[in-house]
Amino acid sequence: MPRRHLRMTGAADCSLGAALRALRTELDLPGAFPPEVLAEAEQAARAPDLPAHLDATDIPFLTIDPPASTDLDQAMHLERRRDGRGYRVLYAIADVAAYLRPGGALDAEAHRRVTTLYFPDDRIPLHPTVLSEGAASLLPGETRPAALWRIDLDGDGAAVATDVRRALVRSRAKLDYAGVQRQIDAGTAEEPLALLRDIGRLRAEQELARGGISLDVPEQEIVEHDGSYGLAYRATLPAEAWNAQISLLTGMAAARLMADTGTGILRTLPLAPDGAVARLRRSAHALRIDWPHHVPYAEVVRSLDPGKSNHAAFLQECTTLLRGAGYTVFEGGDLPDPAVHAAVADLYTHCTAPLRRLVDRYASELCLAATAGKEPPEWVREALPALPKEMAEGTRRAGTVERACVDLVEAALLEGREGELFDAYVVDVQERDPAIGTIHLRDPAVVGRIEGGTAPLPLGERLRVRLTRAGPAARTVLFAPA
Image (tube, rainbow, N blue to C red; front, side):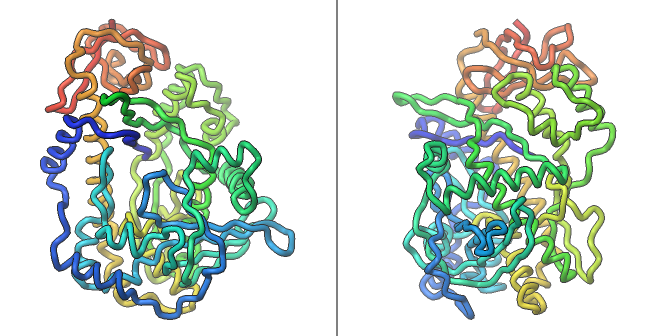
């Protein structure tokens, strides 16, 4: 489900930085890479395995990421099909397998770490930075090995043909979301960048038609001003959603390739039980959100404006339907049950972030083998059965880190302000005790628990609240009705 991500937009407050370092120790997270892993990574960076890579360095790829990112997994080039019947998406994904020897120290360490872990001020990488931010990253002006996807779309944005093969690529530009949005809004973006909006919108329409869901839940970010820090909400830009549609398209195409060949690993999410949907309908009614019985859930979600307090509260409620995602392996041609990802409303897999997520390297190999008409490599087959459990443990650890970071920053920001009054709105109310719930403060951007009153909390309504506890050591904040 979507989490409350924290972004650091300025220098970290020294006390906050110290607390975040202590958090790494408390959670017993991976530290420095062992010497043998670093040595293997250095050697791989100097001499990657590049068998049968096509030369696609003439294609003017570009990357779109947060400004400070250097672990660049994906580069894209968008164009109109020559027959005039739609679009072609060329999507290059970092070929991590070119740098990792199966069964080696680097491979074993990646299985121990599973994912890159993100902190507001730093990250704990899945692979040594000589690879993840250097030799394997799709940095501008550098020739890199990649899994190059070619996905043809018709005029409505539906996929009509898919191909993936190993290639050498070279990105021409490293762009960020805000810059892309400015260019597109101003009408100064030229093709291929201008096509991102067109294709992104068409893919969003395809998503709606199949019943898929994308939740636009505002992010929290740490902002620094004059040596102190605070929290603010950041609404996602349309360019981020359009870019996400390209990744989603590729994950769906990859899942279809696996399904067609009978071996793969899917990202699955069961359909929400009827009771959960009924509860969500009650929440919509309480929040004064119009949801006619004949209107699909996905269409209601798409109509919401996260800038409105009742809509933001409902979006937070919607995340409850996205719990329970996991990874499922299948072999021998029989798809698992369930096979689809309920939020995607189709088969789906993770394959576009191999620098940051373990499973993506294996998904890429399965798809490359499928396209070539070959059996998957033995090292891939041997690792498949254990991957769902490894990914579940790694995903849980990443979730723990994200929640702990959010809680720590909120508590540190409010420490010493017990007794102060704040404006908030109620985003969740417990069914068993409607006097307990969750609130969003308007300023600072804190999400916290509220209790201590006797009357039911007004879901979706603004409320004056009093801070009763703020403890960075315990990473807790608590409010009561004023």
